[in-house]
Image (tube, rainbow, N blue to C red; front, side):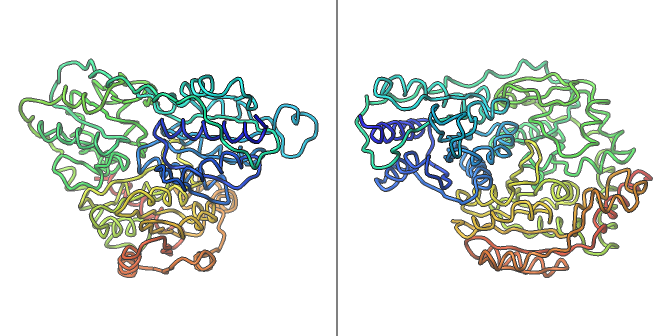
Length: 557
């Protein structure tokens, strides 16, 4: 075959193999070396093969958009880039996919071997570029006739299976060098690819000891089906569940669900009440706050951490980790009769709730009140995406439970980059839309991903909490000691607003400074498809000051 025919044939085989492994979304960045791959995907889209192509001019934002697609669809997604610096631009999203166990398939086009280490344009070492972060890598040779068909398919199968293995999904990297001429090739029929081998069964139920009441559940990062299984078991046994935002239970109004565990553990009464539990079972990891992990490490008498994957999620290494299907684990733990309430827990929760109401009622409008109001006005079905840094913390502390809206989190490496892109990708699949709440620095980090909102198929409301800098750093213990250096080195005020950015990307925009205007803007924004921006102006230092004052009040109770 001619070189261009070989390129087209190998690219077509790769796209077909990806489709066979469940990939229907292909995210493609512009580039010449990757043209055979992009054209193969486009041909299958035009032929109504069930594939979808998404494009964006920025590889970094495109990869985070792919993560949003994965989170909403629970399917692997492929990202295709050209060679050179396009590839390392995917690195932040690959890191998040690694920590969050998301099946991101990175396909990088490359220069052939003869164009490396000789000063050729756009050539750099790409093989193994993501090695510490990916579950598998495949460095393909340049396309050749002898390796078409079975050899190529089997190599692709072995690598692609690693992305979605039940014991531990995650990102993979396939590097594909291509010789010129790149264009004009015709795909040649290859050996009919057999269907990829299916996953065999579920992981066995956990070897947990017999329940030792009173029990306490902790819900970390969970899928919706896992959260339902945890709640059903908790309800059957009257077991309290300390719910993290990523647990899908934090916004659920249910007698067993305990939100704001960080606030409860700030009080002596709360610590004493939770200390009555003889057995603690944690489902999932990546807890948001600091007090809960510290309490679990120091005070939980018997503690198991149940995770569906093959990695440890206990940073303190104190829990007994059980790798198992979480729903199966819940069936194992389901009690025959409810346990009595933990002594003093209801009273401690009531005192914390009253302290929160007092704190918000007497304080100027800032991030805590904004989080409470947004959680109250979310309609059923709309997902909440609290961004990293300060937003997820204020939702953990102040969110008002109601409809049990699903909660998207990006806590693998907890970066503030790519959040707008991820939300846009999530909104593509989630029919009821999503509300993303981010800080101003997060929005500035991902500003060019506002372009993705213009193509959003469903509603994507971006709420920017603008406190003019890194408000989370106002909670640093060293703030008082560093003085002016704190402002210059940590907070870094910028003075920017987001009205012109929304205008540049042709997005509807609202400017809010109180709860009523925020509620009205959110109502209007969520009534329309596509993206929109709501900027909530928060006085610098006000929200962090309110949080610090609330914790002081709780500690004094």
